[in-house]
Image (cartoon, rainbow, N blue to C red; front, side, top):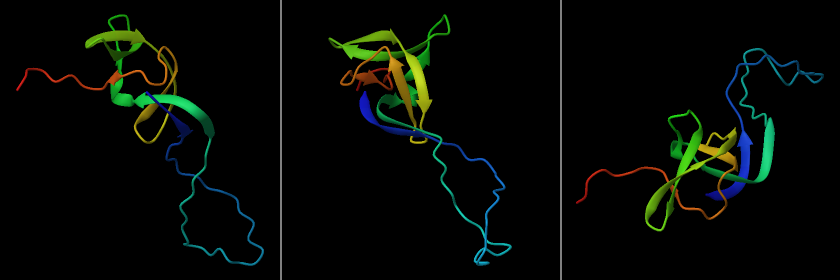
Length: 106
């Protein structure tokens, strides 16, 4: 699990109201805009693919402890565009998260 600054965003159409006293903005012009709705510094996050649901429907991640897979319940926070999800509780920075299990051996 890594700590990072996490932002939460999504893509939605919007029609803004913009003052244009110098007439610099003209009909037909387009713009790409980023609106940050929430930022958390030092958020603990894991790849979203590492988050599973157990039989009871609770969110879990699998940790590697002593070469064994251990299921740990977690509480989720924000989802980031980078394929990461914040973990509010259940694990700590430095835990070894299992994101995939390879079946069979070579």
